[in-house]
Image (cartoon, rainbow over all chains, first blue to last red; front, side, top):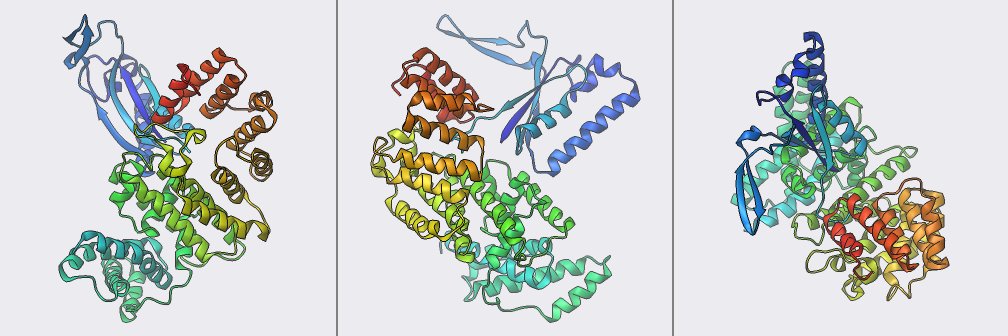
Amino acid sequence: MKYVILIHSNPQPWGHPTADYLPEHQALPAAERNRLNKDFEDGFAQVVERGEFVHAEALGAPSTSRLFRWRDGDRVVADGPYAEGKEHFAGFFLIDVETQERAEQIAGLFSGPGETVELRPVMSGGPED
Amino acid sequence: MAGAGFEDVWRREAPHVLAALSRRHGTFADCEDAVQLALVAAAEQWPRDGVPANPAGWLLRVASRRLVDQLRSDVARRAREEKAARLDAAAPAEIPAAGDDMLDLLVLCAHPALTPTSQLALMLRAVAGLTTAEIAAGLFVPESTVAQRISRAKATLKRAGARFAPASPTELPARLLAVRHAISLLYTRAHLAADGPRATDPLLADTAVRLARALVRRAPADPENAGLLALLLLTHARGPARLDQQGDLVPLEQQDRGRWRQELITEGVTLLERTLPVGYVGAFQLRAAIAAVHDEAPDVAATDWPQILALYRMLDRVEPSPATALGLAVATAEVDGPAAGLALLDDLPSSGHRAHAARGHLLARLGRTAQARAEFRRAAELTRSIPEQRYLNRLAAGAPD
């Protein structure tokens, strides 16, 4: 079963890994930050080792995006991001795991202070069993 | 000469070569690496020089040499050096008479220390002889992910002290259970889009059927092996009618039964008729029997629903599961009316998209249209299959059932 883990974030300035640029993360004592980073690295190393990691990409700053909309019968192209959005799509990971529980366990690795993480199943081209 | 010819030959021979090498030298992971290297050498040399007269012997000779090189290069391990010296003297030139090596490999690949997806990846490479690229294409993951799963699986087997050896009579039944589940999982994955636009899936579906056949050939005394093969054949038979020209899902009730593969139905039914009276009746035989009743009916109305209901009741005792509970409710609705089926569905502890879809169908038959559409909408939200979602959304929009 494939899932995407979507990282929503609003780092200032925009940068990856997003946690390093988040005030909530920066406010933590160094020991705590190190522990969180290590937990993530250990956990994710296991994801890779188990053959569950499929693909990941970090995305450029929301200010570099172009938005395509349709209005009054015409295509309208504008600079991003959505003015109203407080959080932006920062990057994604594609994983392939045995169960929903395992997917949730892995998504949990990505959640830290100031981050919002979304787990969504991937649709398949055919009926399930 | 066509490339496919070479691939067929080594796909057929590789498992026997691996089994012969493993039986002689024990360490499965090293032997598997050596066989892969021999296949690489074959891919280079055979198209140039032609297929050797004894392809299995050729592969075994090259793999043995690679294994020796590998062991020698590990200079830090003195014990291995000694082993390499012994090996060198006894490099085999002939494949021993084929015993149950296919079965032994299957049993090793279905080792309980491995996760189901790792069992699958290992089985596809070691037993079915598929390349990492073919496995990756079939499972829709990158090659690096498959390679990772295979190397981790081999490391796990090594740590668990798993050896290539015939399983003992006491542990064989449990291991066969795992083998059957892995083959069935493989078929299910392949079946997802077996008749869709994805060209790689038929290879996996056919591989699953081939492995099930091999299992029956090697361990014919276990009636559940025949049950698994019958189930795959009877499901495979409906393949051509499952999707319409747009790639949309056609439900069983609306499939053009004239397009079902009659020869597979006959084979599956014959297998079951031979197996069912033999004794222990397990879940695979029961699921195959249910599939056979569907496959033999000329249309939905003429389906022997009381028999399907009886089979689901037996299955519910042998191997209760949410899918079985759902089948039981649907069969009950056909025999005792939609209200009776709905009552059973209301009792289901968890309701996935299938349960919502089934509720939708039964509510529609009771004339409770608004509720039916809400159930179809919920089912469409929950499914992860795009064809199924299109079908459920059509029903939710009020299309004729």
